[in-house]
Image (cartoon, rainbow, N blue to C red; front, side, top):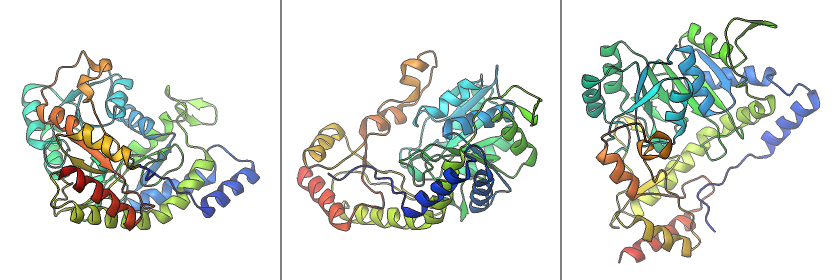
Length: 357
């Protein structure tokens, strides 16, 4: 079986976790502070705040930005539901604009049209599948409206836009370290920003609103990252450049091999560097092709089969997003992780090509 994901920790991560266990300081210890600093540096951000997962990173960011009841946050309907859930958990409401059919990211023109009809208090740009959203255009829109631009970079560790790593290009960026991501801490998240006050507010919110040992200035949550997870994250961050290089090489081989197949392969605009959290093709015969791949022991995944505004949890939200809805019916992600071999990629190409003919 060629799996769709294959997390790789390695001996170094295990050794670092053992060191934490031996120390007895398991929660929010020095490993967390070190990981925050290292990851912020990697993103060229001034500050990093580690959280328990990517959803809590988003939630804490909205709380720190004072986005809550009565506020409306513009984002994409074609993403993992956590993007919208975090908006609602903060008390605000998501507003959806359609996506670009080539990149699958939020369409800046569609976003601007929505803002002409509705009051918007923040924009969340999701870097779907590892490809940066159009941050210049979305940043211009946010500036015009004098509202924050938040990067949901949960799938885009190390991706670049105009030569800069995503995360600190907008006002604030949020990452996930779920096991299948390009780097993992098991579960975990990170908020990065150049805004010291925002970072302090996020750090306070994820620690019960604590301003001192037993002084609590605000109401908050326990969204802290464990020291064990941070130790894993530090080891994974050191390996991230190699992980990205392998994913990009695998993606290039897939793209070359599928050039003549009747599927749409991922795009990579010149001003971006895709890190291929997912290698996602598009075909009207998606379900049939997925079955054929499964019959050949090739893992494939559909991310995401239902747009957020069509989920039962959001049946009270109206949205016009025909491109997103069509895309949700046609996308299929193929194995691209670092442990896929060249022979396995060639096998994937062969199965898809044979199916198409």
